[in-house]
Image (cartoon, rainbow, N blue to C red; front, side, top):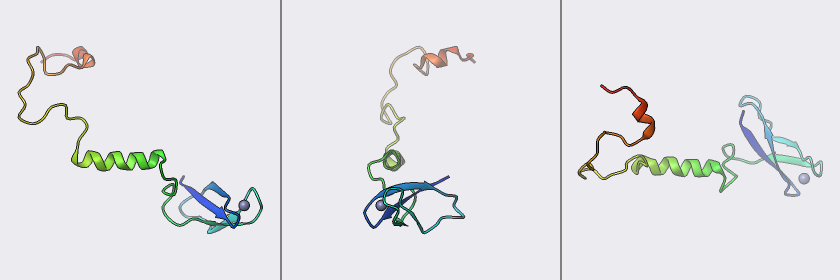
Length: 95
Ligand SMILES: [Zn+2]
């Protein structure tokens, strides 16, 4: 379930987990007991610098710069016995 961030008048921040269908706009601050309003925006996006942001950046980067490419197109394949150098692939049956 998604986590939503709330913030009270005293700038206390806390997270609550709610289902998508029942998201209260306000909650009670566990620190001061005051009313806390749900911060606008998508879940977790307020946590800048978190792993969620890193994931988004990585996804955007891979869209135009795939990380799996090990050699540039047109580069001659290095001389070798097999197609792959991954030792795990050596266990696969040969054709
Ligand atoms: Zn508070």
